Image (cartoon, rainbow, N blue to C red; front, side, top):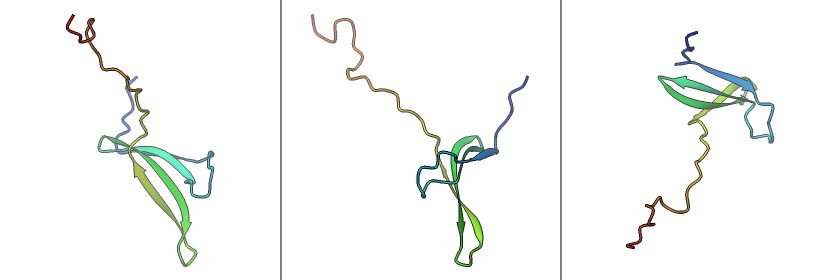
Length: 81
């Protein structure tokens, strides 16, 4: 089965983990011209009471790799003996 092409597409879901009033109502992921991104969406009202969506985009979260405390060294540990 061929892999589905998600280029220039996205998906958004209701945020069931909303912890505070500033958290987005919806969150999701998308792709535009081959670049992945994350989306956050809030439902707001303008000064006349008309509802609209406010959307933000950011780079996907990437868990940092643990850093080694010591640089890689040869068997002698870089010592001259």
